[in-house]
Image 1 (tube, rainbow, N blue to C red):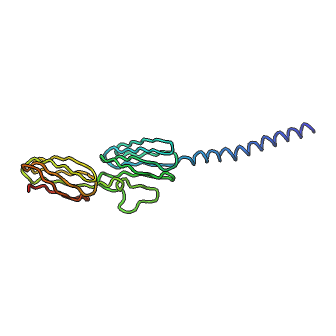
Image 2: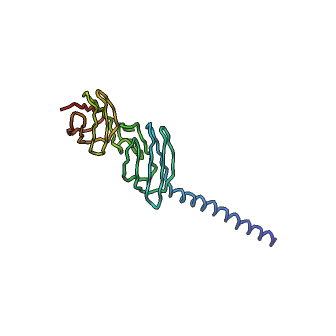
Image 3: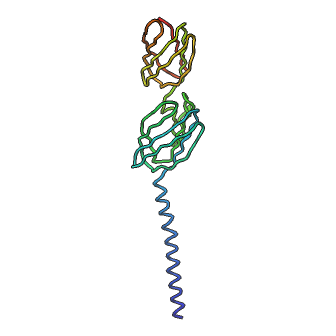
Length: 199
Protein backbone atom coordinates (compact mmCIF):
# COMPACT_ATOMS: atom_id res chain seq x y z
CA UNK A 1 0.00 0.00 0.00
CA UNK A 2 2.84 2.34 0.95
CA UNK A 3 4.69 1.46 -2.27
CA UNK A 4 1.53 2.22 -4.25
CA UNK A 5 1.32 5.73 -2.72
CA UNK A 6 5.00 6.38 -3.48
CA UNK A 7 4.46 5.26 -7.09
CA UNK A 8 1.46 7.59 -7.47
CA UNK A 9 3.46 10.48 -5.99
CA UNK A 10 6.35 9.89 -8.40
CA UNK A 11 3.98 9.71 -11.36
CA UNK A 12 2.28 12.92 -10.25
CA UNK A 13 5.65 14.73 -10.12
CA UNK A 14 6.60 13.43 -13.59
CA UNK A 15 3.22 14.44 -15.03
CA UNK A 16 3.49 17.92 -13.48
CA UNK A 17 7.00 18.32 -14.95
CA UNK A 18 5.79 17.34 -18.39
CA UNK A 19 2.95 19.86 -18.22
CA UNK A 20 5.32 22.64 -17.15
CA UNK A 21 7.67 21.76 -20.00
CA UNK A 22 4.78 21.82 -22.46
CA UNK A 23 3.87 25.31 -21.27
CA UNK A 24 7.30 26.97 -21.03
CA UNK A 25 9.12 25.53 -24.06
CA UNK A 26 6.65 26.87 -26.68
CA UNK A 27 6.69 30.23 -24.89
CA UNK A 28 10.48 30.34 -25.18
CA UNK A 29 10.27 29.42 -28.87
CA UNK A 30 7.72 32.18 -29.51
CA UNK A 31 9.91 34.67 -27.66
CA UNK A 32 12.95 33.67 -29.74
CA UNK A 33 10.97 33.93 -32.98
CA UNK A 34 9.66 37.38 -32.08
CA UNK A 35 13.20 38.73 -32.27
CA UNK A 36 13.17 38.07 -36.04
CA UNK A 37 10.94 39.57 -38.71
CA UNK A 38 9.87 38.37 -42.15
CA UNK A 39 11.31 40.37 -45.05
CA UNK A 40 10.64 39.64 -48.73
CA UNK A 41 12.90 41.15 -51.40
CA UNK A 42 11.55 40.91 -54.96
CA UNK A 43 13.37 41.97 -58.13
CA UNK A 44 11.09 42.47 -61.13
CA UNK A 45 13.72 44.38 -63.11
CA UNK A 46 16.07 43.02 -65.77
CA UNK A 47 19.17 43.97 -63.75
CA UNK A 48 20.81 42.97 -60.49
CA UNK A 49 19.39 44.44 -57.28
CA UNK A 50 21.07 44.48 -53.88
CA UNK A 51 20.44 45.68 -50.36
CA UNK A 52 22.83 46.32 -47.48
CA UNK A 53 21.40 46.73 -43.98
CA UNK A 54 23.30 48.17 -41.01
CA UNK A 55 21.94 48.41 -37.47
CA UNK A 56 20.94 46.58 -34.30
CA UNK A 57 24.46 45.16 -34.14
CA UNK A 58 23.80 43.39 -37.44
CA UNK A 59 24.94 43.58 -41.06
CA UNK A 60 23.07 41.96 -43.93
CA UNK A 61 23.77 41.83 -47.66
CA UNK A 62 21.04 40.63 -49.99
CA UNK A 63 21.62 40.15 -53.73
CA UNK A 64 18.94 39.28 -56.29
CA UNK A 65 19.23 38.33 -59.94
CA UNK A 66 16.61 39.59 -62.43
CA UNK A 67 13.19 38.08 -61.76
CA UNK A 68 14.27 36.63 -58.42
CA UNK A 69 12.46 36.87 -55.07
CA UNK A 70 13.73 35.74 -51.67
CA UNK A 71 12.43 35.61 -48.12
CA UNK A 72 14.72 36.59 -45.22
CA UNK A 73 14.40 36.78 -41.42
CA UNK A 74 16.63 39.59 -40.13
CA UNK A 75 16.61 40.78 -36.53
CA UNK A 76 13.60 43.02 -35.96
CA UNK A 77 14.39 46.76 -35.87
CA UNK A 78 15.21 49.88 -37.88
CA UNK A 79 18.19 49.88 -40.23
CA UNK A 80 20.29 52.18 -42.38
CA UNK A 81 20.20 50.73 -45.86
CA UNK A 82 22.07 51.05 -49.13
CA UNK A 83 19.72 50.06 -51.92
CA UNK A 84 21.08 49.40 -55.42
CA UNK A 85 19.04 48.89 -58.56
CA UNK A 86 19.07 50.01 -62.19
CA UNK A 87 22.59 51.41 -61.82
CA UNK A 88 21.57 53.69 -58.95
CA UNK A 89 22.51 53.69 -55.23
CA UNK A 90 20.17 55.15 -52.60
CA UNK A 91 21.00 55.54 -48.90
CA UNK A 92 18.11 55.86 -46.45
CA UNK A 93 16.44 54.16 -43.48
CA UNK A 94 14.13 51.17 -43.54
CA UNK A 95 11.74 50.05 -40.80
CA UNK A 96 11.82 46.30 -40.27
CA UNK A 97 9.90 46.23 -37.00
CA UNK A 98 7.06 44.47 -38.85
CA UNK A 99 6.69 42.11 -41.83
CA UNK A 100 7.89 44.01 -44.91
CA UNK A 101 8.18 43.48 -48.67
CA UNK A 102 10.45 45.53 -50.94
CA UNK A 103 9.53 45.29 -54.64
CA UNK A 104 11.95 46.42 -57.37
CA UNK A 105 10.03 47.26 -60.58
CA UNK A 106 11.29 47.48 -64.16
CA UNK A 107 13.84 50.29 -64.43
CA UNK A 108 12.27 53.72 -64.87
CA UNK A 109 8.87 52.61 -63.56
CA UNK A 110 7.09 52.14 -60.24
CA UNK A 111 5.77 48.87 -58.87
CA UNK A 112 2.40 50.36 -57.95
CA UNK A 113 0.59 53.33 -59.51
CA UNK A 114 -1.45 53.75 -56.35
CA UNK A 115 -0.39 53.50 -52.73
CA UNK A 116 0.86 49.96 -52.03
CA UNK A 117 -0.57 47.75 -49.29
CA UNK A 118 0.66 48.16 -45.72
CA UNK A 119 4.14 46.74 -45.26
CA UNK A 120 4.98 46.92 -48.98
CA UNK A 121 7.71 49.29 -50.21
CA UNK A 122 7.83 50.38 -53.87
CA UNK A 123 11.49 50.37 -54.90
CA UNK A 124 10.70 52.53 -57.93
CA UNK A 125 9.55 55.37 -55.68
CA UNK A 126 12.78 55.12 -53.69
CA UNK A 127 14.96 55.26 -56.81
CA UNK A 128 12.90 57.99 -58.53
CA UNK A 129 14.19 56.96 -61.95
CA UNK A 130 12.60 58.05 -65.23
CA UNK A 131 13.07 57.12 -68.88
CA UNK A 132 14.38 59.97 -71.03
CA UNK A 133 14.99 59.82 -74.78
CA UNK A 134 17.81 61.94 -76.23
CA UNK A 135 17.82 62.79 -79.94
CA UNK A 136 20.90 64.15 -81.69
CA UNK A 137 19.48 66.06 -84.65
CA UNK A 138 22.86 67.43 -85.71
CA UNK A 139 25.27 66.15 -88.32
CA UNK A 140 27.98 65.92 -85.69
CA UNK A 141 29.17 63.49 -83.04
CA UNK A 142 27.90 64.88 -79.71
CA UNK A 143 29.00 64.38 -76.13
CA UNK A 144 26.62 65.40 -73.34
CA UNK A 145 27.46 65.82 -69.65
CA UNK A 146 24.43 66.01 -67.36
CA UNK A 147 24.78 67.37 -63.81
CA UNK A 148 21.92 67.39 -61.34
CA UNK A 149 20.48 64.73 -58.98
CA UNK A 150 23.23 62.53 -60.48
CA UNK A 151 25.97 62.98 -63.08
CA UNK A 152 25.89 61.25 -66.45
CA UNK A 153 28.07 61.31 -69.56
CA UNK A 154 26.49 60.25 -72.85
CA UNK A 155 27.73 60.24 -76.43
CA UNK A 156 25.75 60.24 -79.69
CA UNK A 157 26.58 59.69 -83.31
CA UNK A 158 24.97 62.07 -85.79
CA UNK A 159 21.19 61.65 -86.05
CA UNK A 160 21.30 59.07 -83.26
CA UNK A 161 18.54 58.51 -80.70
CA UNK A 162 19.08 56.81 -77.33
CA UNK A 163 16.86 56.16 -74.31
CA UNK A 164 18.33 56.12 -70.81
CA UNK A 165 16.98 55.62 -67.30
CA UNK A 166 18.17 58.49 -65.11
CA UNK A 167 17.29 60.14 -61.80
CA UNK A 168 14.28 62.40 -61.89
CA UNK A 169 14.93 66.12 -61.45
CA UNK A 170 16.50 69.25 -62.90
CA UNK A 171 19.80 69.08 -64.78
CA UNK A 172 22.32 71.36 -66.36
CA UNK A 173 23.69 69.72 -69.48
CA UNK A 174 26.79 70.70 -71.46
CA UNK A 175 27.05 69.69 -75.09
CA UNK A 176 30.29 69.26 -77.00
CA UNK A 177 30.36 68.81 -80.78
CA UNK A 178 29.05 71.91 -82.49
CA UNK A 179 32.45 73.52 -82.95
CA UNK A 180 32.61 74.24 -79.22
CA UNK A 181 30.42 73.73 -76.18
CA UNK A 182 27.28 75.24 -74.68
CA UNK A 183 25.11 74.61 -71.62
CA UNK A 184 21.38 74.55 -70.97
CA UNK A 185 18.98 73.16 -68.37
CA UNK A 186 16.12 70.71 -68.53
CA UNK A 187 13.87 68.77 -66.15
CA UNK A 188 13.99 64.99 -66.45
CA UNK A 189 10.49 63.52 -66.14
CA UNK A 190 9.01 60.20 -67.23
CA UNK A 191 9.19 59.64 -71.04
CA UNK A 192 10.60 63.08 -71.72
CA UNK A 193 12.19 63.60 -75.15
CA UNK A 194 15.28 65.84 -75.24
CA UNK A 195 16.47 67.06 -78.64
CA UNK A 196 20.00 68.29 -79.22
CA UNK A 197 20.60 70.95 -81.86
CA UNK A 198 23.53 73.20 -82.55
CA UNK A 199 22.89 76.81 -81.51
